Each structure stands twice: as C-alpha cells, then as structure tokens.
Image 1 (cartoon, rainbow, N blue to C red):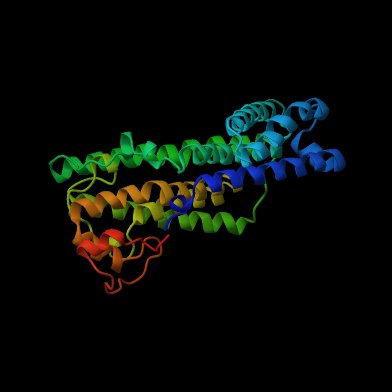
Image 2 (tube, one colour):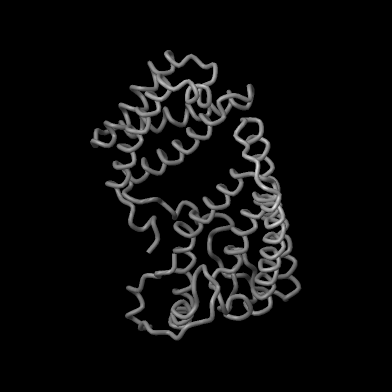
Length: 322
C-alpha cells in the first residue's frame, strides 16, 4: 500500500499541528541562538517578520490543526508567499539560504496538508494529464515507435537530468547551502549514471520491440512487456530514472539534486504508479496480475512463483512492494 493511500483529513490536520510546533521552536531559536538567525534570516528584520509570521504561520497552523475553517488556507497562502520572498532574497543576496530551503519544504507540506484537509486525499488524478495520461500507442512501425522513444528520452532526460539539476545546483551554491562531498562520491556517481542510463535505454528498447509502443504513458505499449529487464523488476525505467537523478547529484556534489531525485521517486511511487497499474490491470487482467505477483516493483530479483489468487479475487489485492 502506498503512503498516499493511507493519508486522510486527520493526517492533514496532524501536519498543521506539527508545523505549528516547528514554527514556534524555530522562532525560539531565532530569538536565542544567533547561528539560527544568521542561517535562516541573515539581515532581515526578525521582529517585523515575527509580527506577521507568528499569527499567520504558527497560530493559523495550530488553528488549522484544530479544524477551524479557513485557517488551513490562510496558513498555506502565507507560507507560499513567504517562501517566494525568502527564495528571492536568498537569490539576490546569497544570504539566508537555509531559511529558503526550510520554507520550500514547509510550502510543499502545507499544500499537501491543505489538499488532505479539504479533499480527504491527495488528488493524484490531477497528474494524469498530458504525457502522463494513459493511452495505448496507435499502430505504427517499430521504427516509428523507436523515433518517438528517442525523442522522449532526449526531452525528458534533458529536462530532468540536465536543466532542473543545473538550476538546483546554481541556487544551492548561490544560497550558500552547498555541502562538499568526497571525490569517491563523484566516482561512484559516474559509475551509477552509466549503469542506470544503460538500464533505461535497454528497457526502452524492450518496450518498443516487445510492447509495440513507447515508454511514455500517452503512447504506452499495446502488449504487456515481461522480457528483458522487465523479467526482474516491474518498473525498470523508473528505477533507472531515479538512479540517474541520484547519480547526477553525486557527480555535481549536490545534496539538493539527490533530494530532488528521491522526492521524484516518492511522487512516482505514491501518486503515478497506482494509476499506471490500474490501467495495466484493466487492459491485461489476469496476465498482469500473475506478473505483478511474480516480479518485484522496485528491487530487481529473480521472479517468484505466483501465490495470490487471480481473477475476481485479484480486485482486492494491494501491491506490497512499495
């Protein structure tokens, strides 16, 4: 079962409660520990900010945790506004970078908690649009599918593994939050990048050759692919992509790029994968259910024998491989 499947309104309120406590502790640290103030606020007027932040961030978060209507929206709106201001200040001055990082994390958590409080779940269906909307590839030649796959790889790898990490690395250094890594980490990152890229290319080739489609959900395989890397892990391209992101972070000595890659893995596993597997189960039925029982989701290993029921009983089966 994924994390997103067990989150509900109560989890959102608990988050706001934890955020209120964390905010109060942070302000105590700002008032009593000069290093905390320098790292998170630098030369910003702490007193003036506290006049607004304590009621709008700390108190509103506490009231949101108590269930008062409108407080979750107020706390989240203020958090996002402060995040934008802190990121701009850190970028312009090179100061208070840790404050910007903390507020980015707070904004992500606040938005997720607000969705939980108002909707009762994380609306993962909002992500199933554009290239992530599942549609079977139109009949075409293998060469045509291969051309589309190469274009997808260039666009997605270029964006996710070059452009985004470059922006993150620039900000990490500008904000003064860069943490040097041993040279061995870079060497291991290079080796991991080569291995992960090879896995991704091999998996894409198998998807084209055996699946009569492309790796992209909007032109997904018309046939269930269970050969090549798919014999040992159900999502080799996701494994490859996450490993590539971590490897780029190691190569660039960027802990923030590594965090970015790991956060991407959580989004994919908890929000996108369930929809992808639902589509596969709807299209391939018992064949996919037997495959899902035999082959691990994340950790490559030899296929195991199917032990769970298929057919109608499979409808209530929840994948344990998270």
